[in-house]
Image (tube, rainbow, N blue to C red; front, side, top):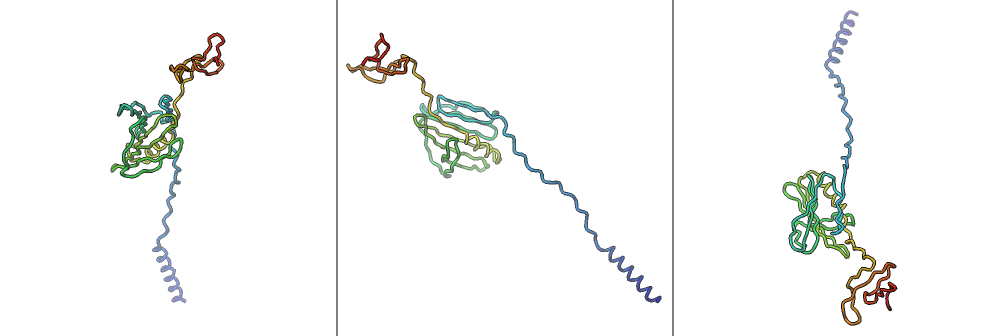
Length: 216
């Protein structure tokens, strides 16, 4: 009996020692929940419109605009810039050039257009020679660029470019009774048109002062 008791005590001590050597699992440290990235605020935008030239460009309110020096007598431009980069709009004649690094489509307000695209060694990008012809209006060429490699700058420049809208030139309304030279009189002299208060249009030589009508 004494031998059994000694053996039992020995086994119990051994079990306690083995249990003391088994490492207990470390308490888990609660990890903070991942925070969803909030979208960057759009901020205030303003719209630059040149109805005389025929284009409109919404942009962040902190961007600036300025006229560019004329490159030729027939090639004019305006620049719109911010810390992310800028958009330059040119109009007139004399566009052209090669695209050594190829083209890629960019989105304008009126649809997709092809642009020469280049990525510089510092990660900045340039989109150039983006052409658009307004029916009855000006021919345009657009250049856009980033000033840093931040993807947010890339996205903003393309967003601004995507709002660029081209439009026909505003046509001045002729005043009642105005004469504009658009034809010839029966004797071969240059003639004009009369726009009467009623909206009727006739050649100036046909205009009858007494009844304010067109003489047949």
